[in-house]
Structure formats: structure tokens, C-alpha cells
Image (cartoon, rainbow, N blue to C red):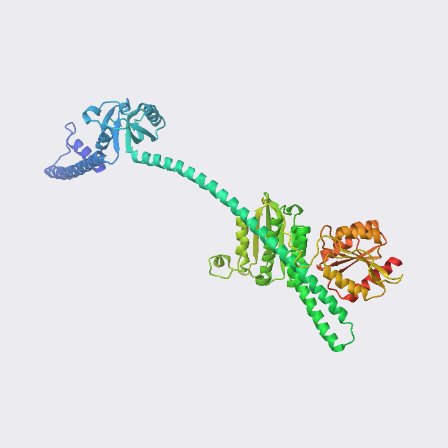
Length: 588
């Protein structure tokens, strides 16, 4: 490898001076022996300088020789192969690693075309890389296979660089070869593994999707079972315990009118206790199975929930909901209702505020619910990692339900910064069946749709007596009401019915003055029966009766045509006074 050195400037100056001094055509300016001595002295100095420069050149040459020898050692034994090609692509120089890669003795390699050692499929790409390296002057990289006499072709990576002269003409190519057989084998193995892995992933994904579908279905089945049990328990509370307690209260109130003062005090206390007991059972039944959720859907039930939160917990809930956000599935509606209720109860227990915001809307075919408060918040990451107190164990249950249904739950909160919980769930989720489990009534005394004895009571009344039709599907309540009404000589029960259909037939036949109409009954409820009767008999007054003493039920009965609405647990005096009042209004 040729090496050029730039002569030292000082050495050039000395050489020019020496040439001038020994120029035979130049006369020597020597006029005295002293001048000759001075000239000799200068020549001696120049001679010493030349000798020093000569020694420096010798040392530089020795160092250069050592460097060149090291370069030769590195070049020859480098871990990658080096090949130098002539402009025609002939091999002019090659190191030991390249020999081993080509697998041919050196004497047979030099001055041969490099392309002859490549497989036919790789020759074109190699020549194209040569031309491109010479054309644009940049290193080109290509992967190719070398032919081997005693084995399969060998994969190598070639980095090709063109050396060009000042006229940009290629004088040689330098090719660096790197054995990539192991890399190619690894790529092949990885490709095969990827194919196998993709197949396994596809199989596992299909299996997981099937399991997820099964899990989602099980979640819905579980929720349906819970809802059926809730409805069953609520039905028992409403249809049995509350009705029996109401009958007890009616009886106590009647007995309370007796003159025994000591007995009267005890009866008053028992009546108050029974009333509180009924209120607690009513609230429990409402909590277990809100009637509005079943009859009017989620959004109406949430309005009732907001009223309940304000009444019982002092929490003012603002509800913002899109009408189209009403869930299609009643099971999903039940899940969302109970989740929102649990979140609002957490606000009551932990947020230390008296306001909350509930937002419901549809986004990308998913139902999105936000429950926000501006309370004291909490450290959610710490609570999530078990280092803090997680407000409301129900949050975990809510999150599990959302995940099982293909949704999610996100909590954004910091101490002192309030809390926002965002629930998302698919809008439509299929279920096997939404049919409710109807609890048996035969064991608890509530009658089926079979008609009771209908007609005038055995107790005759005067012509001015108010004629009353009693429509109530609970036998005990009918018995208690009949006993109460019989205690007043100006009231007479002309007939009894057990559902809305019988109420319509009896109203047509008996033409009563007043109808005491229960709201919740089989076959046809009291709201529908009231609407039909009031359209056909303008002179009949209907008083609604219900164990659910809520504003929504009251308003529906009034809208259907009832002139009054009472709870079954209201005092007997209220019922008697209401009957006389609506009858007086009728006769005016």
C-alpha cells in the first residue's frame, strides 16, 4: 500500500539554500579568509541539520514499516473477508478469511472473476450493486450466496465500496464479506417459529374468545339469577310481609278506637312500630327491585334513585342522560343501575360532599357512564396496590362486571381533587333468556287470577250509602279493608275483584260510586284498569292504593284518571275521609 510523506518546510528551505550555495554558475562572495570560515561554518550547520532530518526520516520509515506490518496482520487475519477487485471485477487481492469463505486455494483465485464464485441467482444482484457503488460513490450492501464444493451454498453479506480517481473513474472495488449463515439459519428458525406461534396464537385466541363469550354469558346468567332472586325477595316482602303487616296495622288502628285508655296507648305504640316496620320493608323491597327499572327502564329508575339519594342521604344528584342511552337488555339495565347506585353510595360514605353528577351517553356503540364528585378523593394507585384504603369494596365488583361484559372501569382521582369513575360497556349483549322467575304465591296466601266472590256485601246499607268496589289481589288486605269499611254504616262494599280485568267487568256491571284500586296486580295492573274505566264511566271515582308510596307511582295513577292516591299503610281515618271527599265531589 503506497504511502506518501509531505517534506518538512524547514528541510525544503535548507535544501534550496544548499543548492544556491553549490551552484557552480554563481560566484562566491568571498573576499577574505573570515568569509570562507563563516561559509564553512554554515555548511557544517546545514550538514548537521540534514543528518538530523535523515535520522528522523529513518525512524519514520521504521514506524511506517511497523504500522504497515500490523496493518497486514490485521488485514490478513481479520474476522471478515476482504477482497479487492479490478475495474473488470477480477480478484487482485484477498485475505485469509475470504479464502476460507470462497473455499479455493489462493493461486486459483487471483485474477479470476469474483462473480464465478456466486450462485447464479445472486450474480445479477451483485453486479447491480457494483455498478451502483461506482455510479453514486456510496457503499452498497447486498446479501448473496457463495458456491461451495463440499457443501451447500454459504450466505454472506457484502459491503461494496468503489475507489475512484480524480476523474471519477473506478480504479478498483473493495468488497468486505461477512459470514451470515448463522443469522440466516436463525431467521429461518424464527420464521418457522413465528408461523408455529401465529398458528398457536390463532388457536389460543379462538379459545380465549370462546372462553370470553362463555364468561360473558355466565356473567349475564349470574346477573339474571341475582335479578330473579332479588325480584323473588322483593315479591315476598311486598306480597306477603308488607301485606300482612298492613293488615296488622289496619286491625290495630280499628282496635285503637276502643275506649280502654291503657289498651289504646299500647295499640298506638304497636301501630307506630308496625308503620316503621312497613316503611323499612318497603324501602328494602324498593332497593332490591325498583319498580321503575322494570316498568320504565334505566333512565326513569335513575331519576327515582336521585330522589332517594336526596331523601335518605342528603346527596343531590344531577342526571344528564341521552334518551337513546336506554339499554336494550333489562339485564344490562339492572347491572348499570346497581353499579351507579354503588358509586353514589361511595360518594355518600367517602367523598364528604352533598352533590354528584351522573352522565350517560352513547359513544361508538358503547354505553358510557360518568359519576363525578368534587369531594376529597383518594390515592387510587396506592389503594390499588394495597397500600391504602379503597373506598367501597363494591368498586372491585363493578370493575369485574364491566370486564366480564367486555367493558371497562376507569377511576381518576387524587387526594383533595374529587373523583371521576367512567364505566363503558357494549350497548348490545346477547343473553339466553330474560324471562323472570315468578315466585310461587300459593304458599304465602296471595291469590292467583281466579275470581273471588263478586256481588253486594252481606251487610245491607241505606240508599245514601257510598257504593264501593274493592279491587285487591291480596286476601288479607281485602279482609282488612272490608272490616274497616263495614264499621261505617254509610259505606257499603258492592263487589270484590282480584285484578284489572275483573275491575273493568265489575265496574260495567255494578256501576259503583268509588273504586279502591290496587296498583300492582296480575293480568292487568291498576294503572291500565283505571285508564279504561275512567274513559267508560265518567261518574265513577277511583282511589289508588299501593304499598309503593312513591311519587312516580302516584303520578301514574293520577294521570290514568284516579282522583286520589293512598298508601295501604295510611291511617284508616285518611282512607274513610278520602272516600267521603271524592264521593261529595261526585255528587256536586
